[in-house]
Length: 70
Image 1 (tube, rainbow, N blue to C red):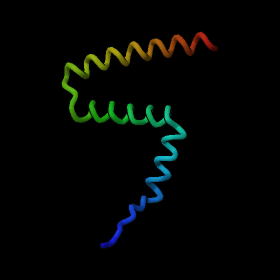
Image 2 (image 1 turned 30 degrees about the vertical axis):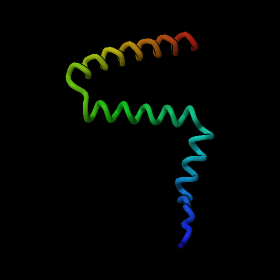
Image 3 (image 1 turned 90 degrees about the vertical axis):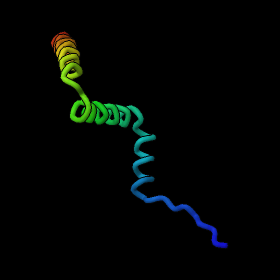
């Protein structure tokens, strides 16, 4: 009976190592990807209108914060 050793792809290992080292950035990118996918593939008109309002509120917050630090 042969014993199989599971070998991992070097690229997969590199990706895993990067994700462990950059947890916050990986989480940010994963969330951004999920958001974009939802908007493109599943969002209803009602969802999009709600998201527009949330985005506008976020823009205003970021703009006012940016202006205060200058």
